[in-house]
Image (cartoon, rainbow, N blue to C red; front, side, top):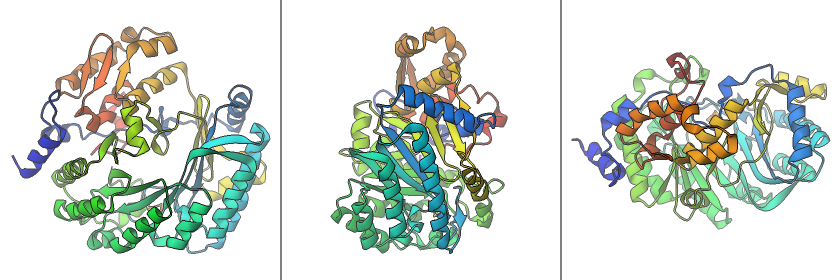
Length: 474
Ligand code: SF4
């Protein structure tokens, strides 16, 4: 056994689960969705049109007015290109493009107000991108004014923004706090200067440390740090140094993602030299080191790449079985309709998902004609709804009582999911799930592969051909 093997065993094994081995890590390193939605976005169809979206909004107006909304705003601009990037973004130094984009966001908000009425309550707001901090302070103020004119921000809601550390200073963070943001998410990825150079994203550790200290002084409720392992020039040793710095930084939440090298799909990744990427075994070492470092430092493994301090709302929600999952990952807020604004943004209203046009030109064209820029989506079938409930219960609670699904959807669970339950027996043998007469439970070890468990219930993932489109779990 190598030292890494020992770490994995110590970290993940419990009295009820078998020892985790590198073989298991390797075996379940299969492609799979992250289940921020079910069905996943690749199942959306163009037959879902603006009309379908309007109907969903009308139905909400009739039936769901009392429930708070969630809003996501996509701001696509970035000043410089990170080579690992797989986001929908536009790299530009022309900041005047923001003003035009804001005008269209305003149109899109107005269209929603026409269909939903004014004064709807929001309990969650997230600004993502791209880099939301590409907007100037004045532009961010204007965006928030637009939102506050049309919606009511509930006290105690989650108001978060993704922050590129290269684009902010303490004054800008103070401005974000004054606008009502109470959560910041810093894109850190890796502190190693060589890695930063290889991915074209230079941001010295000292800069991030001073921003996080400033954010604490400004009393932001929660600070998240995004990390990526599997980047070029990363080694288990260099990544371990980043991990130690992160532990010193002590963000409330950590999101740890595996880099998926898919240059045929994501053009920026063609700038990465594949020979500089760490081998699979090194990636497994980095993952196991990260897991053990964070757990030993007192973090709770929330699920699917996410860690949180025990006193953080996310860790509390996990303990109390109140976790939810949406397009931004795990959340403490109950499932609610998500209005998505901006180019390529994905929303969820009632039993539908919808996505806006992916190019600025098309997005602007729709809005110029006073049309919603929705170009694809999905109206969920009854089977989709049943499976969504099952998959989200697995991803968020790690357990499922068959009876709860039977009562909610009027099915006989064991016959409806006979094939899936049979397939799960393979995972039961590896110690990832425990099955009994009444339900299933994901084990401590299974949490680290929770999407492999959820995938068993995904009707769309019947062929390996489909699976190949998704990133590896590890
Ligand atoms: S990783 Fe973020 S900041 Fe970098 S190019 Fe992509 S969206 Fe922009």
